[in-house]
Image 1 (cartoon, one colour):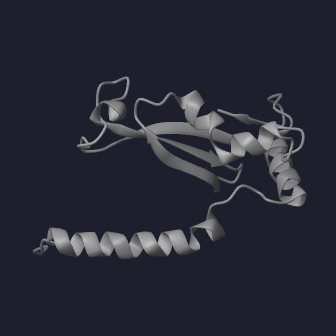
Image 2 (image 1 turned 90 degrees about the horizontal axis):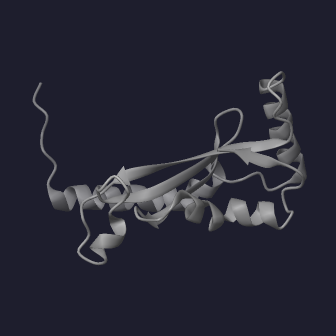
Length: 138
């Protein structure tokens, strides 16, 4: 079987169309629990999952990763991470049933993980008490 090559202009059009769809419907599928009922359900799911491990009131888990990119022509040095390659520092918050609640993928590779966390909407909601009594495992 021969696989055809997609031209750069065609690939750009495909990526743009897919991105528009993801942006239009993404918040239906990726969002932190907006209601007290959903927050309490998430805490209950983690309590059942970690019954004998001493992690009560867990709202979710958080982790980050560096996604490699081609060196940008503007502010190139900001995108070099601690392992000396160009990247975007991404962060994901997930539930006990492995659903994404929040995704942050907008900071250059030189940004520290704590900076990404402290500038996320989930961190803001946690620090202002909007999520009640709980924490995230990271």
